[in-house]
Length: 166
Image 1 (tube, rainbow, N blue to C red):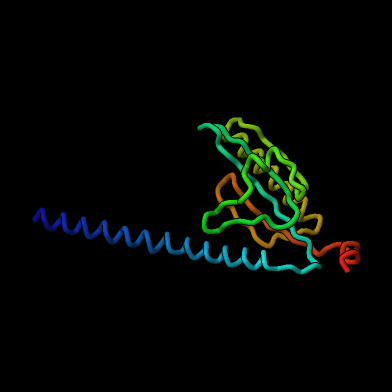
Image 2: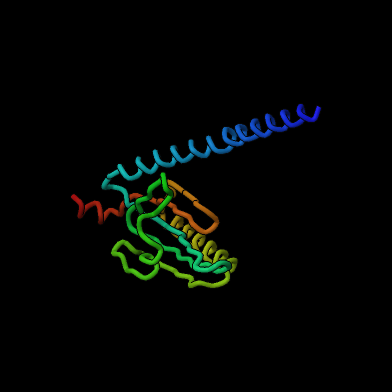
């Protein structure tokens, strides 16, 4: 009789494992594939009548319980490897460098994790709302975690830019 319960328990664990894999892991892979397809479409779009931009919230945890963060706004779309969910530019380059594509930057040095997370997220949301009020439209929004967020934006290019492009 005890052997029956062992067999039932073992089979139950196997069924639960497969249920977990198919119910939770497979849909996540499909979302990643859809995100990769959307990113490929965005990167391939070269319409000269559209201005493109990226708003990023990036973070790193230098020590347990501490967080560094930054909010940056860049010209053009920031490239992303969707299979590894990695931005090619390092956190350090964003926080200290002055890339020519940089339009705005706000930095939070290493401090209490929750305070930095909260203030950087608020600043990110505020900057996003400001950009949307200026006519920028969100075309793709990808959140990696509570403290890492990428938003791709676009808007019709100003008439002056269109005239000089011709």
